[in-house]
Image 1 (cartoon, rainbow, N blue to C red):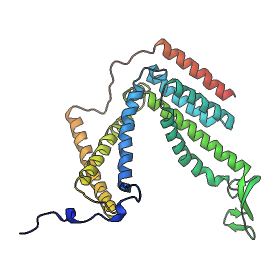
Image 2: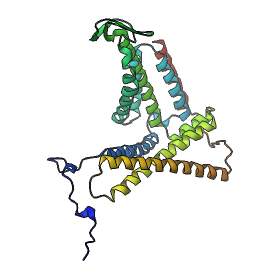
Image 3: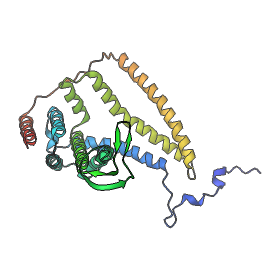
Image 4: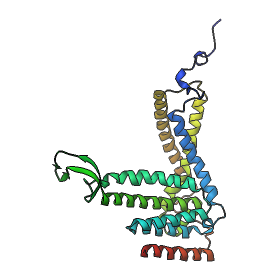
Amino acid sequence: MKNKVPLFLLERPSSDSFIPGKGGLKISFIEKGIHHLADVIKTGYIQWETASSDNFFQKIDARVKILFLLFYIIIVSLKKNIPSEVLIGAFVFVLTFLSRLEIFNLYKRVLFFAFIFGFLIALPSALNVITKGEIILPLLHLSKPYRFWIYQIPEEIGLTREGVYGVLMLTSRVMNSLALSFFVLYTTPFTEIIKALKVLKVPDSFLMIVTLSYKYVFIFAKTIEDMHLAMKSRLAGKVSNAEGRRWIAGRLALMFKKSQQRCEEIFKAMLGRGFSNNIKFYGVKKLQTRDWVASAVFFIVGVLFLWI
């Protein structure tokens, strides 16, 4: 009688699928990527919950929050000394604490992006090859100085005091800008942000792109997670890195086609329902007393930051 047992049930799992001494399976890069996608979905729902709570900053009108964000980002960009940036960062931290947000999760993201887009990008400018000045930390000694076209390579290469100050200044600006942005996003529902931007005369085409992008990034992230679970349910062993790369390449092509198809379907549905490239909001509330008071307080504090 012919054996009808599937081959993958007869094969013994390889020994490298287990972590020695722990008895668990190794987590592949696919698993890690899917976990990050799940975090994206989770963060979106958490943001909605925290923004809808009845705390300090959440009660303020979204129009005041948007103007607050723009005003303070301009202040962060204009300041040219680190103590002022530290004071602004402390002010945002106090607002975050009063709004009862998850400070650790918020500042974990802020520090990560500030390190990548602020510190690492600006770090080469601390060398005397780019920023001239007093060398405080020598790194390399050459036999003689070199010249390439318009660039002069000095004999001694190291970190300058002026360059390090510039790196710290840029990093603090990026960190404060990110903290302000995340703070407003975590305390304001997305629909209120779009409504406030509409009242502030932001073009409808920009609002439409932002709205659709925000909505469907969660849909496509959930679709990829479902694809991975479907593939995982059909496996009994470990997926090699080569197979994982082939699976990811195939899923990227599939998601590209699905994105194009979904965009066409959405556009046709919008036209079928009478879309005329104009976004209309109804029931826009007037600013209350607490909104005017908060606006005045934030404006006065901002002027003090500019004056310091």
